[in-house]
Image 1 (tube, helix red, strand yellow):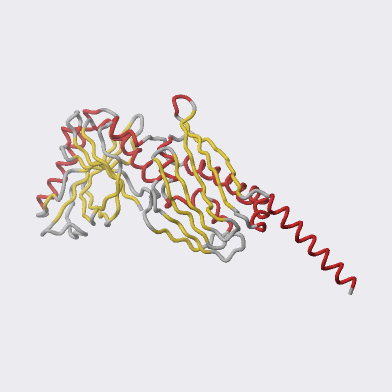
Image 2: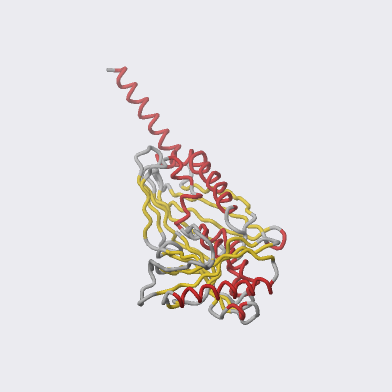
Length: 356
């Protein structure tokens, strides 16, 4: 009996020491790590402020690639949320929700997990650094509260190893993801090109008549070839009883230092129908028939000389990638002002790229 009492007393002492030490442990934890990228602040901000790219940089799902993921709310900004469910120990069920964001400055996520602690949050702050602010420093902090729970406070002793290592890994993955985005500061399009910021639109299914060409980088030769290709298309439209369904388009295949490879394209319709028109006779001409499925497109509009279009194409691709969309097929411009005007400051264009 005496031995049992001694054991119980020992257990009580150990428990008391456990509680006493726990009381004096920190009631919260704060972690901070940073990484630098040579991409502009706007690019880093948009990738962090959009949950569509979350799994490309956040390492939580690396521990269970088979975890079920669900996006809810908006894709970007306050209210955007990604939740995950996993049977893997250490991952479990959780979510990240954007609760605050300041354009090109900071993004704050509220975090829900099954690990000890409450009010978990992670903030990303962005700062332009380097020569003329061309680079960006991304600093991620993690904060968690443990209250008066001694067990949770003990768990906080290991947060640097668990969460801290994930933060380092995630920032490295973020830098890698950003390196795949063209380094175009599309946030400056309104200022530099008087062009709206890129946005998503919907392109219907359509039938196109196209003629391709490869032309030396000479504006007069390019314009002449575009007009020549357009004349071929007009002949096929007339001979097949078709109607032009929209302005001429230029689809860029490749624009190099010596040559410009492109297709001139015109959408057509017959009997009011523009989708999947069959039986178009193009024999004896260089004209080809192409079909576009209905698709989302990213795009903007621009008024000015066609020499600026390559920058706008790159800007649309950069915007698409940071917002979680992959560009597909070729970029193109709808020359709403016509071909000749496009070679002057009176050109009018809708610049688009299909995305998925």
